[in-house]
Amino acid sequence: MLAVTAHHHVPPGPVAVLANPTAGRGRHRGLLPRLLERLDAGGRPLRLLTAGTPAEAEAACHAAVADGAGALVAVGGDGTVHRALQAVAGTAVPFGPVPAGTGNDFAADTGFPADPLAAVDVIAAALRDGRTRPVDLARMSAPDGGHRWYGAVLAAGFDAIVNERANRMRWPRGPRRYDLAILVELARLRPRRYTLRLDGEELNLDAVLVAVGNCASYGGGMRICPDADPTDGLLDVVVGGRFDRRTLMRVKPRIYQGTHVDHPLVRSYRARTVELAAEGITTYADGERALDLPVRISAVPQAVRLLR
Image (cartoon, rainbow, N blue to C red; front, side):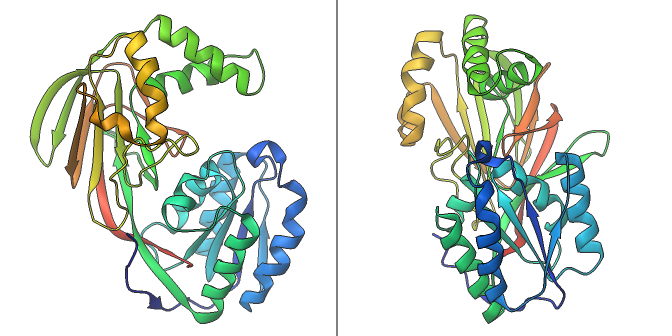
């Protein structure tokens, strides 16, 4: 799938490293010294970025790129990758994701090993050889001019609503909060009216699931847009129509294999530009809270160069 020609150029400058110590509930926290040691084999000075919050992490990445970083490496999950992508998208600064989070969908779908140490070895070798491979990103923009980049999938249906509910809940802590949010939103499940414009062609539909994928997976290996290819210059749109509670719960496990797209209530589309509108929905991109609908999403070919 990712048989894209390699480019031989990594700009001069130190390698900026963003590490999220809380990624994956902290299970790789003790790994950072070993990761940095192996990254050192890339032959570039390393600069560890410090940040206490996701917003600070994003600002630190922007500052590092502005200060002339030769590359950016993110150690964490899709949330950490999402923050880093805002700074490197559309620039010549190459990027390496080290999968150390709960969900590592962007790294997996763009061909990096699942093991953080193995991924760092791939990145170090690419730095040493000056090798990068371009992949597409998606760029979303709001009517007020705000915009975000994302690498994996934008959720704009039931999953986004559940995320929004879980983020508002103060109790319980940890993953059980998400399970409870699912139960609450399942009880309130109803199809919503969406307006979709795919390369200018308008569709009006009732749906409970809407996902726009640059890559195939979200949520830690759920292949919601199973045919999405981050090198084809297109976005994959998967729409789950008028599901009732029971049908949705029966179909949801099939998303891990990507076989949900065979269900008669599921429709798949492909477009360069997707305009999406619905009442009262906040989207989630790469698992991170993003923009309220309506949004316009464009596939941006070769928007980021990966160190692999």
